[in-house]
Length: 353
Image (cartoon, rainbow, N blue to C red; front, top):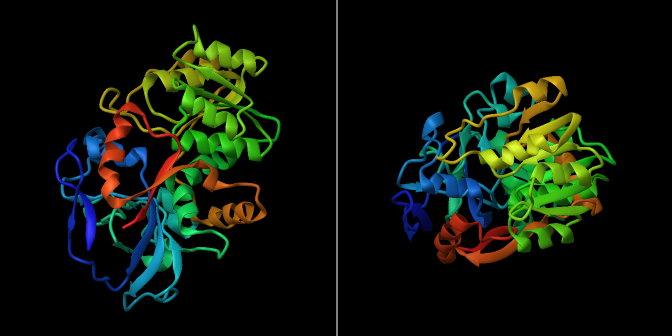
């Protein structure tokens, strides 16, 4: 089968023939119908995350936002069969730890990230294996198509968990979103759909234009602002109730915290690059005296898919609005490379393998 393989960090992915996987007893093989290209793939391609012991090895097949059809089933799998339409969360849990038993595979004690670990080849390929398939595969409702699910993938569901669960978003809240890539634009759409007032912050007007289309109540061009945080606070009538760093650099994290009103909530979604190496200075005294909350948010608990699918079925949420372009596997290397300069608008999705 064909796959896009990371042969050298920072070098274009190589699209080439590799062996078709055979399922282990607990696994299924999923024939890929669609897979998003995420900034986390870019981080992996760059060789980031060595500072947390998670640098992705060369030889890895990337891709962690897939949807597809079960093509082979391991002998121990009980709930899936060939032909099932499935989505696969990027955080593959073991299904047995206390977090998994509560439905929170995103916090699994032995989590394996799909496409970002040598023992979990990813979905930039015609097919890929899924460990503990009974636990980790989510059957797709008939009204959610493969491309839409790939758009939902990592970034949309991460944004939903960040806002609805970690931040406890309420109708009427002012929400600042710093960084309007795929996860940031998803957060804009979700905040608007849930009755909040999103403020989009970015340095590119094309991304701010897209944010307005998705429901942003106001925008701030951080490249032109004298003081980004103060501009957001003024727009929000004294400070945002919730603010998200959807990029993961020092400036966006600090601006996000600075955008908050008293007792506001910052949610960190973006992961850092080799410039920060996971360490960013934050205004601890201000956070203490104004009782600001700081939350991390990683993926989404499996038990939340049912609600997400319900909101999509009702038309409240429309992940398809965030999709920027569809492309072939051969185009994936160039698209991934373009993320160096933040050129992608919305979520690019591979639909031709």
